[in-house]
Length: 470
Image 1: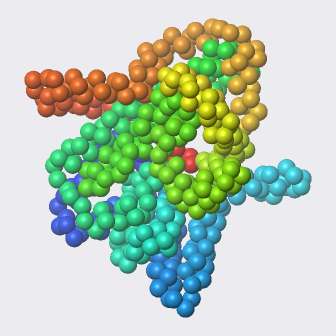
Image 2: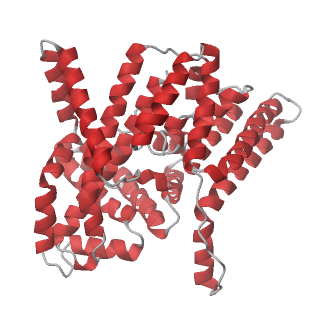
Image 3: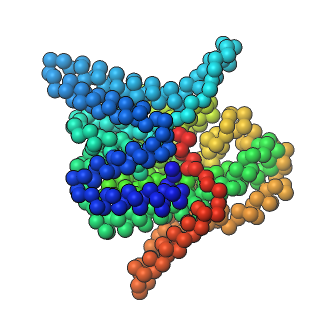
């Protein structure tokens, strides 16, 4: 059940809000935990028992780590408990995400015929695995105590706004909010607006852009014209931003409606003047997770140039693998790892002398090229698409296909491009503040937005969020 489905907006969410509202304060966490398990069961009914086992295993693992930390005569006990729990969680994640990919490569290398039937994944397995890992690490480091309340621990792991596609909220950041948080009409209204903005990004922008992208990606990439190939890549770049950015807004808005504060997950990444800046603005919670739990523990940039290069490549290799079990994701991760190394160690002094507005152009081009590897089903497809983007395809520079799709999506392309930069939001906020009756104008604006979203959800074919596959 996705946030952009009518049954979520008009059935599950009102039901959840009503139960949460009437429940006394000490029972709100219980009802949210049960609702979150129901949400998980709705999407992955056959994995409910597995989720309960995962919750129990990590709950007791956290207690064991803390207990061993307090035993001065056994300094290695806590580390052994941590490593054991991390290995179990990663093996579980690896089985669901990478087992088929591993067997395919074994068959290719050793000419065997092992069965590679793809096993369906529990919804949000990558995200809730990283959540429990953050919990285990935070307990081990002493950043937060082990959670002894089973209900509170269940809520942290399964909280439905962040369960499927994040944001990845560290346990240390969420612990105090589970214990005590403010709930009121102001926060509810602010959360509702954030949710609605995210819904509009998904339904009105991402899904509309997707029609052009999916139509073009169904064609032979080697037959595309230059304009068609670039149009498809640009549509995907904007679609992915509004799809995943929209989901993050909806998740953050939903959390605030229930009294939780999550940090923003996107910060206008396409206005970045460097790839380093881009990844500070894109999927912020994932970048922060890899920084805090992988890059810094490896030594970060404090251990000399050689180890910094090693650490960056490890992080980006893992980032690519995290996104999917195929060689194009591995290549995508290494692509960014190498570019970031060049940016940091080779071109840093040159780039510092170039104005930001000029640096944004090559940064955006490199990001769009990177998305080709991201959306391609394989490396061959990706390189043929890139070849067409740079004139090596059979479609020439501009063909009838490019004209047809460009004319059909020109308006939404312009609107989306403007929406990907902060100027549009700033002008809208400024306009509302200057009105004589800003509250009424705001109500009318968001009511109209809601009507458009409902119409979009009603008449269009449902399109799942792109990051559900990860």
